[in-house]
Length: 242
Image (cartoon, rainbow, N blue to C red):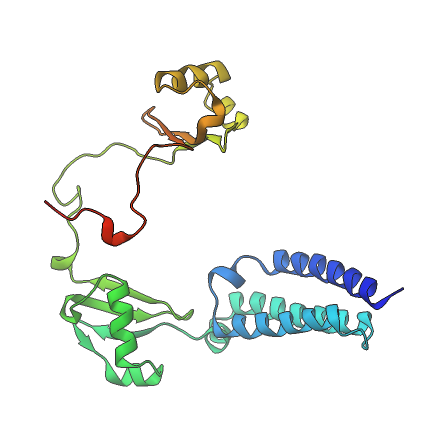
């Protein structure tokens, strides 16, 4: 077997194995990337790349090494769920870096976060004045959670004692010109009903529809492929306020 074919077969096998192991480790590896997860991801990726292109090393020993790393990561993941102390050692713990509008310099130094980086992160959260912050917490995955002071938080209907209706999640009915039949059946509606509703909006061909959904109030939202909206090529061309 030629080296090119061996490399191709190895790549396919490694891809399948990584997909399997990724399912075993779960979504936490992606959605909550701690330093530990980062190290595991880099190492596993490096081993997988070697398995694919380094034909001097036999495939089986590399597979054993990859499986060992995945096994240890899974073992520590399960163990950290049962032991808070171990979880703190592996993933770290949240650190308060701003309290009542005051930066906690010693905590900032502890996590080696620069003042400029903190200010940039706060601006990304829509906070331009530190005095507006009740708490800012550096999470174990590196994100900063911000709680504004009560007087700086937006007013909600509850604050104004206003009643609201249930909104829920819209149900997809058409995606890229194709009817999502299981959703239509779940709503107790027929394809004829959907086509009639589309005709009311001047749509006679399902192929014109990029996306359509029905909200919990019974309103049908439709986005066409051709919306006939003229969009300026540059943001500077957008009209400003009157």
